[in-house]
Image (cartoon, rainbow, N blue to C red; front, top):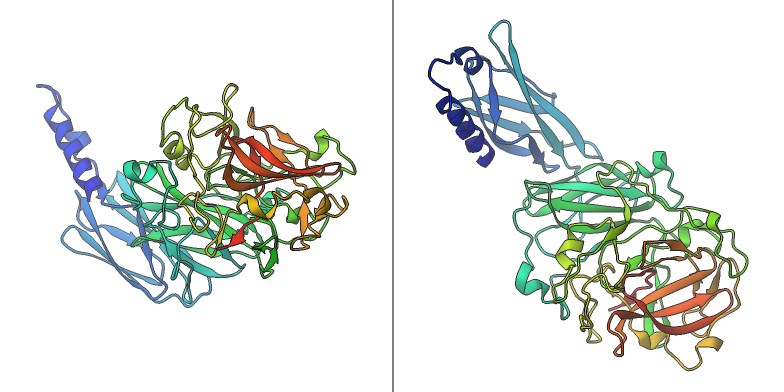
Length: 468
């Protein structure tokens, strides 16, 4: 309705601004249609929606799909949708037109209806990542940020709040397979996601992979975004080092040695949104940084976003730092030639992924029931003896869960350069380095070395989640 009032006001201003002697009769008398919205969504069960309309001609012509009933009365359209009998969402368009016999004006309303049998992913717990299967219909809450928990020591909630406000529509930002095949990537998410009554509804296609869906305001600003992990193989967990570990990297489709789909996604320390690893097949057989092995994956499928692996961070000294800046730019890898922490330029403790053992923050990228691991599992005096030999571009954690850890490479803090795919794998922990708070704790696994230390938080590393 705000849009309708705004457009009527603009028309009034146009009339009022005409100078004496100007004849604007022809312009103002041209056929016109003004709508309060261009988008309508329905649940699978069907329903009714009302759209305000102003037309300066009678006998508005209406064209619509057979599963929609549209009537016009007293400057409003009533749209009724039947129950959806299909297993996928359906999309249509209502076309409205008026004419004076010569000139014609047209406008349209996009209509999306969810499928029946929708699985509600956030029924018991919200998160920044949801695990789904191909060929399904899903929904999740889009009115709360992350898990609705704490923000560490970032001071983010006090300034920006926990609730997602002013949401208008959902948008698919990107969808991608690990080999960056565009034709296949477009079948990860089926159709467009729909925002309705504080929830996002979407359907998955026939292809496994990863995607990110955002909710936006009327100006197209990203308010929050969620990682959709489409994987058919059941994800399990195993004990190791006193913790219960996910059986693969966050975002990986399997944990098969040598398979490109085992890589998982890359994260800057403290951020919730993922970045893609190299799209090249494994080819390194020793500790070597081969250019052909490090090829950016810029695939977005049918998404609206673009990847930027070298987006300059803002020089901010105090919390909440660049967090809201990062929230609104989930496909921008924040870099700096002078600073090593994307969040702030000063040495402050932030605990973006939590400080207490059971604290899962709103920025934690792991799915419901999981969280970013602490250092305790890997930071052990026997670490060099805890791992098997380098094989198939990875190592087995023989003293822990006995799972395979691929060496998927990393993104460098300066310039977002993709490095050492197949020869080096580094895994974030939630810990910060007390001596240098611009660094986060990481497990270092290479073809020729193993240790636990720290690395600048602006680097893009892998994550292996643990059970909460």
